[in-house]
Image (cartoon, rainbow, N blue to C red; front, side):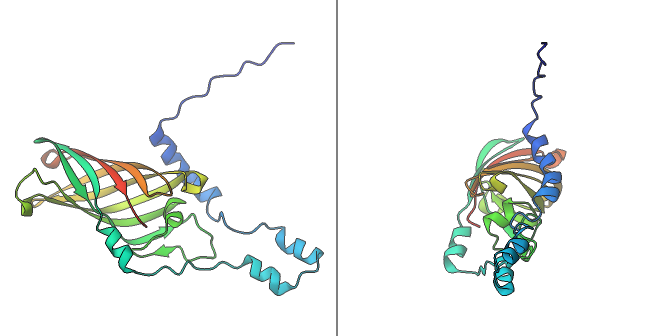
Length: 219
């Protein structure tokens, strides 16, 4: 009997896998923590009290709050390499998230976060507004070595709902020495999103540059 010949699997670029996971996140990852539909029927069959069954379906808000250790952790910068017309230099980058909306957590929980964002809420699927000051010491004197970015970034889970691996795509506006330019970025993250790599490209001639950042984040 003739054997069916298996066709080799096409290799999908990493960036394409990140973008494709957007559709999967909306369809399959919108409410990953919802209890199984069979739970109410099982409770009725075993004679469990309705109140107990309802309690098993309840979701509890994380109750996160601003603390001094969290504020100190935000002061730790992420190292980066900035490459532009003047050469390649070492730099430092900080990140802040004023607003985030998560489409990957339990629908019974609030999807909105401000400044403090749990790793699962961010990397299971979300979209955020971010601000990002950068300091490149070798460019000039202290006051003229700062860049500021502000933009939108989306995160998508790749493995274990984002705990093991996730990715991001985003765009931002770069301000440097009175000039403004658009930037585009992509990133991959691991270890619950605490460590990752981001590549940011600015195509505008006046501020053309490529930045590779080792992202280190605590919430």
